[in-house]
Each structure stands twice: as C-alpha cells, then as structure tokens.
Length: 103
Image (cartoon, rainbow, N blue to C red; front, side, top):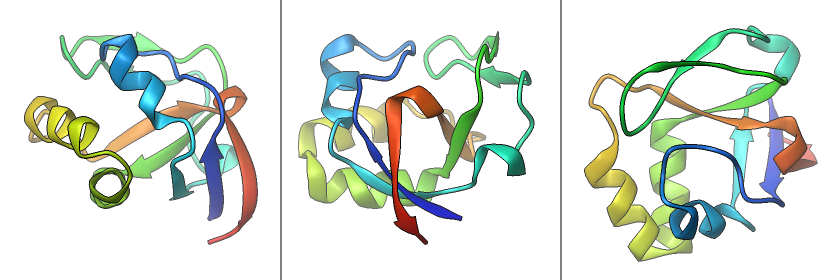
C-alpha cells in the first residue's frame, strides 16, 4: 500500500464544492496495479456502474471517513449521509493524487 495525497479535484457525482475539499487529504491506498484497471465502479449518488477510464487508487470507506472527520466536518457529514451502506471503497484517479510514501 501507498500513502497518497489528493492534489486535484477528483471527478464524481458528489457536488463540486464537496469534491474540491478532498484536496490535501492523505490516505493509505491500494496501488493501481493491485486493483482492476478499466473496471466499473458504482456512482456514489445514483449507484450506477461507471467505467473507469484510467488507473485509480482504492481507499477503504473506514479510512475515508476517519480522515474526513479530522479534515473537514462538512464534507465528512455529506459523505456519512450519502454513502451507500454496501459501499466498501472509494476510487480516486491516479491523476488526482501524488504518492507521499509507503503505508
């Protein structure tokens, strides 16, 4: 696993003002070669499969919520209320993150 920092607003179904707040968050993430590239992910709002056009980092929901709770309470609350209960991970395109070390 790698430690990554989000450096650009990631794409997605969440409102842009929520997605912009990801910038600066740091997560331990599965490396792109450890997950399926060109696989489908489920949209966070409409729960529809979406094709991933590029490699992505996968981050556990538990990690996401833990980091967001300390990073931005408004964003944490939005995600806590909008995550599907069956969702295990969030995906971030490699182009939106930088590796900052080993996890």
